[in-house]
Length: 175
Image 1 (cartoon, one colour):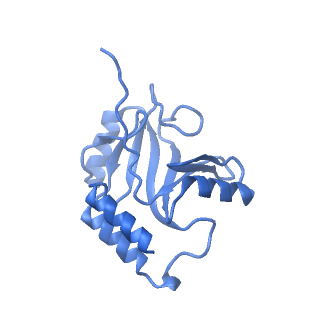
Image 2 (cartoon, helix red, strand yellow):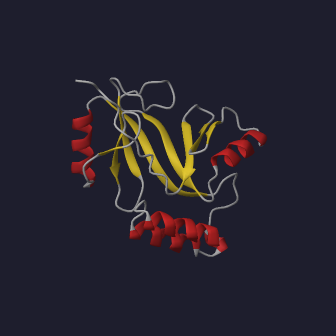
Image 3 (cartoon, helix red, strand yellow):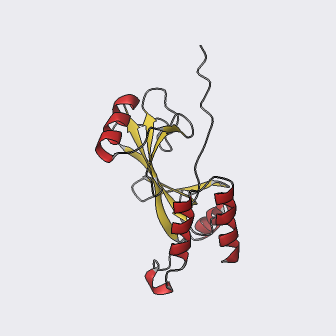
């Protein structure tokens, strides 16, 4: 547990976590064992993100900002943009036209959830991928920063660290 505290403090000091996020993580770690989730292959802590295919990025951003009071979008990875919730988690807007942020069919479908991400305790991508493979989960991909596991109907569950931000550099679109 000391390692987890040290990791969270380092991420706070590096500006990767807000004070609210680190205090929330500490509070969750202090919960009695009975209050935590039952044993599973991994210990889920947060619904990290939901990746939604959008036909019109500006229109979708305006809708979610107006409906939920979220701040302006920020670029994350591929062509995805995040609308961050103040207490953690985000909605990832993935453009249908020219978008490269879908994890399933290769391109997002407007109005559909392409995948969702779950932040898990003590995340080590290579270890998690290996353990899921060994346990007989089919279609496990990744390692390192995140692990992708399709559910029985093909919806991808992306497993990552609770604090993963999936930051990226916008692709060069040329002039």
